[in-house]
Length: 126
Image 1 (tube, one colour):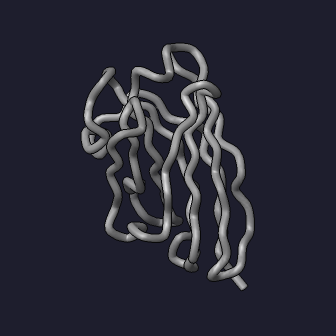
Image 2 (cartoon, rainbow, N blue to C red):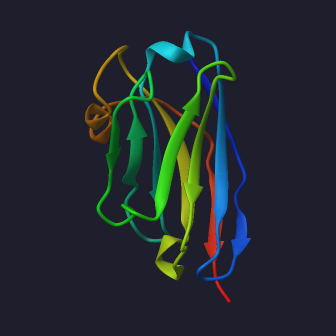
């Protein structure tokens, strides 16, 4: 079982930037794809982005493509989500997620997640 702890959320003005971090422990981090999801008030949780076990493949939701960047540091067991040009509609609780099986393509995480973090709030407002 993997444990995931997010950090880096907060309040930011429209057009601003934030970087979320997710520290993982409990299994071999470098064997698994990692991803980010979000859930806005009154809406279902939605996929944001995912990165393959080695960082070589990325998968994005159309709503964030070109504005958000996902990356990972396997030496630090950490995955990041750099969010630029933030919009009010990006306001949500952001969840880190770990894949359910090793060495899969990141697209698999759209529908199959093994573990979730507790979430971190991101609010975009002036």
